[in-house]
Length: 157
Image (cartoon, rainbow, N blue to C red; front, side, top):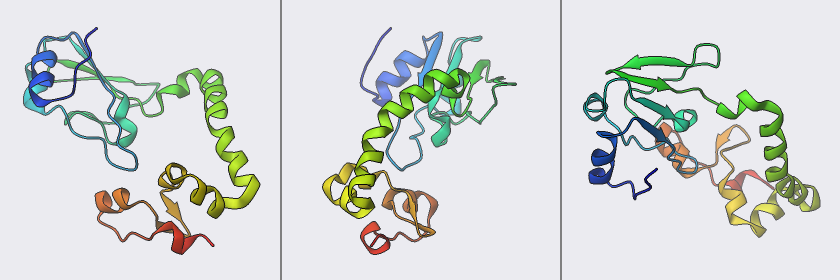
């Protein structure tokens, strides 16, 4: 296992030698960055594999497209792709327990003072809001979708 900063030079050097690449880039409220183009995947060893964990946000590879738990694999450019959205769904009980533990503190904040107070106390929490009152409340998402943005402070009273 190698971990390196995701610079274009490092990505190219590693991907072209890798038997397995896990694409797991995440930018809050945005499309996942496209780190692997088709030409680079073509240079991977034939029969190698790409697991694109970021497929829920559009995927990190140009060749990534959503699959399903019932038909999880496809081969493109000689590389086996596994691009199942909601991968934790394969272990539903475990992932539900983990999600519940992670979200409970936020639910308690909402219950204590409502969304406006919770967001004012925790700007990171507010940054997790994508939609409110039928409008896009995350600037990055609005930019990616080329749709109007509304600040949450105008939407939540």
